[in-house]
Image 1 (cartoon, one colour):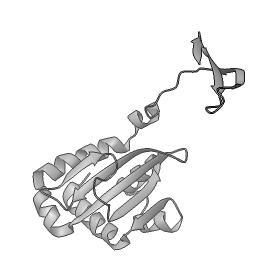
Image 2: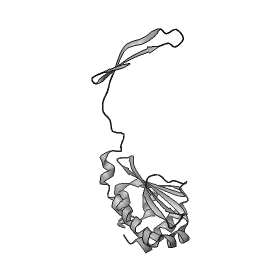
Image 3: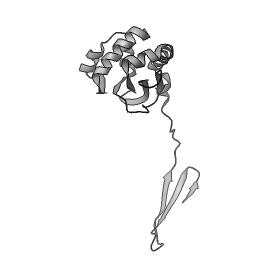
Length: 157
């Protein structure tokens, strides 16, 4: 195998006989980015999660006592997941961070960035979004209702 400009020449051999097979094969190399697309950087929901994080720092230990759960949001755009956020109200004084939950999440919410903003702005009720399929929930759905009350009372976004 060797590389010529943007092509890679492949030659395979059978290990037992050392006989060359499949010689003369070329593969065109293209550059790809292993990082998520730029879509994730421009999500409106990121601002909301950052504000929740600021509020968690102020009163996280109180919320941990009341909620004692881990929530994960899978935010999508055009049907593809672009970012995950985790709200840990189970350990320490609570924290929110970007990425999948480090421990198994009690409740996982999957929704688009647009629908998340509609929920936060009060333009759609969470139970309505759930019933029409815009919000998907895995895990303990009752904890989601507890989270709604807490965020409404304390985060006032």
